[in-house]
Length: 525
Image 1 (cartoon, rainbow, N blue to C red):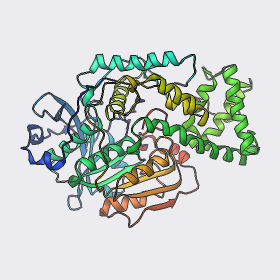
Image 2 (image 1 turned 30 degrees about the horizontal axis):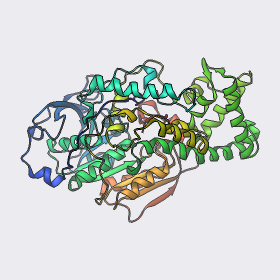
Image 3 (image 1 turned 45 degrees about the vertical axis):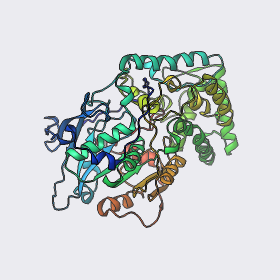
Image 4 (image 1 turned 180 degrees about the vertical axis):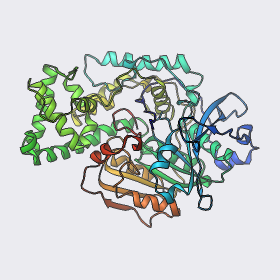
């Protein structure tokens, strides 16, 4: 079966400058049930090409939950029911990350990949979050170039970077300004609770990856009495939303790069990049300097030093990064690629897996709506971005200037609501790979620390973004399965050792129909 691919998620929009008091779950439940909570899903077969057990429906939810009888938007949901009612525990909502990722087809994937005892415990519920895909999708009308935020800092181009950031914000404000202020994590959490209510569930279970961990954490704080078995996989640190989550890509790329130089040095006879970590590092930075001085052709692309640095996520996977650097070095020196190289795969690593065809900006619009609309902590002065980019380029040379350079949020209107405080106990399970490029270990640890009462499962040596079910051999799968089937958290945090085979290689060898769609390319969570 061919499942949807999720486009890169990067773009912007405008938010209104008002302040809204945060309603507690108790206050919300004390009010009379609004119409949207009394609706009944009209389930139907999603597609004649897909299993009949895969059902879809569309709900109506308030655009602004302060005005539940006002403007409504669509919320597309899907499900595959448990085939064993005697073992059914409840409904499990699924989210793949983003912000801006479609989750409608996740029940199909999970029903194939989950162990039988876990699968029988739940009705699996997918949904496209508000603004995404089939849920009243938004757009900012951005070009492919405007969707790309991988912008290195250079003094001579900073002015054009400022123009780009302002243009993205202005186009989003013009195109979808009446909706974008309400495309936020808190409102998506409210939508999740609407799904719970219309399904007739007292509590909700949940499996969320990457950005989905923050969404799940927010739900656990807004609706603690309705939070059941929650697995938050590849964690977003609530204290870093959202500029800090982009900047952590730079800080944590440095130890990953150091690990790569050790890996490559130990295999110097095979790769010839240097027989010490220092020598490998000098080879790499020499290649970057050479490409900056004289860009070279590689598989139809003009490669400069900034493009090489922008592939920072690749260095979390030494077995991928090393052949890439070897191939780039050969191209720069005018030599043929090494025997056995896969040029198409290497080009994908260098370009971040960018789609060959122009992409819709739906995901990008949602990304910036959430990133800018969840918090008012983004700097408002362009000078601060320039100072930070200069400083971080020196401190974190691989990606520091990319991460700290100006973003459209500098020109966003103030958020409708404040970010969600993480003060309430949350008996949830967080899961993390040691070497995760998009939500690095320090971020996963931050999520665990923020959620008092949580437990953490850490796959030591685990590579890649996404743990549970991404790698069939991961040592983290067993404790997650135990929690989902029993509801009992581990007595203490669990650190297990992943098998020695590279996680990335196991992921690539998985059958295409059984690969989870969470990306590891720069620019999304």
